[in-house]
Amino acid sequence: MAKIVEREISAQLRSPVEKVWATVTDNRRTGWRSDLARVEVAENGNSFTEYTPQGFATKFTITEKDPCRRYAFQMRNANLRGDWTGEFSERDGGCRVRFTERVTVERFPMTILAEAYLKKQQRRYLEDLKKALNE
Image 1 (cartoon, helix red, strand yellow):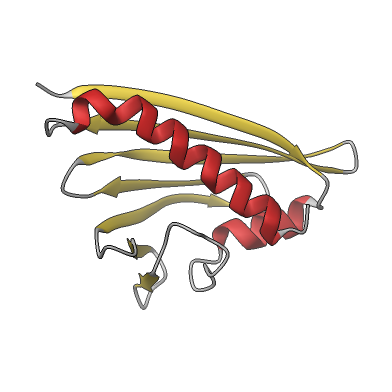
Image 2 (cartoon, rainbow, N blue to C red):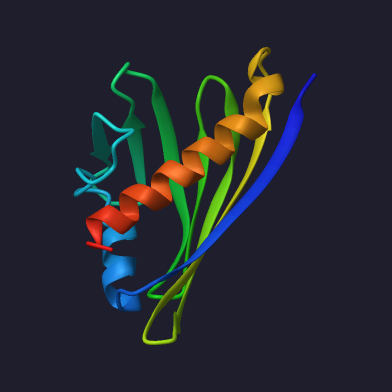
């Protein structure tokens, strides 16, 4: 049975919105991500595939890219499909981010683990982003 999970994480960062935007949206420079081994970006830049250190692939298709405001894509791998949205706003001399993930998980046992997995992944992503921004 499929399970739909939606999670959101937000943070106030000290870095300017332009720097945060550039870091998050540059899919050719992802060395700051501790959960990835490599990323392959399509020639047109509209899609990319991320690979974990174990070789597990997730394909992403960019659906929206409004500079320094909103970045969104659809994702799919062997365990799930869904979408991710990043919202960026200038606030208090830095950048406020809100990342929302909504996934449909169709494979057992991922249906049981989905919420905990997304929570862990979002926390790791935000920690990695802060490190990349020297925060």
